[in-house]
Length: 345
Image 1: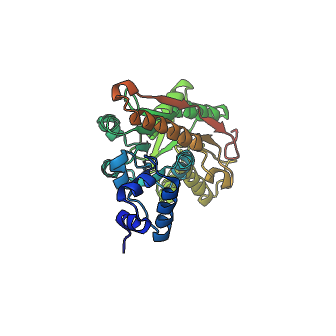
Image 2: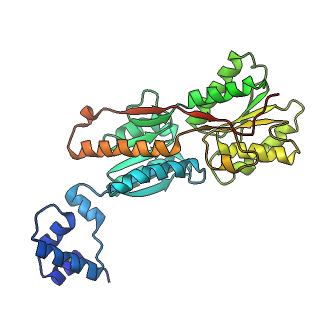
């Protein structure tokens, strides 16, 4: 049978109000009475209703986190950074996987609002939802921070990586090694992929390598099947007589798929073909050869977003108006990590 606050009050021989004051720690209670209530709570194994407490205190000590995938290790690493900060402040997180679906993303946001979370962090939000003004509207209802994703002219809090400079550095590295036939491997429906593709074309044009532009879309880029789907797609590309000498992949799991395709074809990386990835997830250090990649500050992104959200929650608690809150933007530089998968022609 479920234990209620009334049961605790009877066990401790106090009023329900006194039990509530002990639980919420919002009014002074005699030490002797407090100990009696705490002993009753422990004896009955009573768990306070967080939502009920939230209605009273306007605070639930919970934060919602929405990711487009739990499979790509980039996202769990960012979440770990978020949790490391929030846990120290007594917060519990709700983790939601939208499966890269804009409607699911909206549904999760509304569900989190219904659970009266104190704040929401969205990692790589769907571009459609950002451009529609959905998140600008949500930010007026609850403290909100977005990590990466479309942000041009959007009045929300953002923590971002400079993926443009990371892509430039990676592409210029391949070109410095003498590669002119560089293929671009991307997934579908992502602002990050779109941005990198624009930079890819811009760099090829800048260095006079635009005679060879090859965009390879492997479908959804963050699920269990991305490595195999990428491998199957790249096998077809490698069978072409005009195959590239290097691949730039938009994330490390796609880069691993390219690596596997080369092995299937009996091609040596990097002797025959160079491969470069993006993110610097742990897979890039465990593959053979180890993948040259662009580090995206995953853990730091999470920590910084959590700290930003806590500031927003504090402002919200102190009833500072949305107009005076404004929006904050923090941008981190990426870093090229040179390993074993690229070689000079």
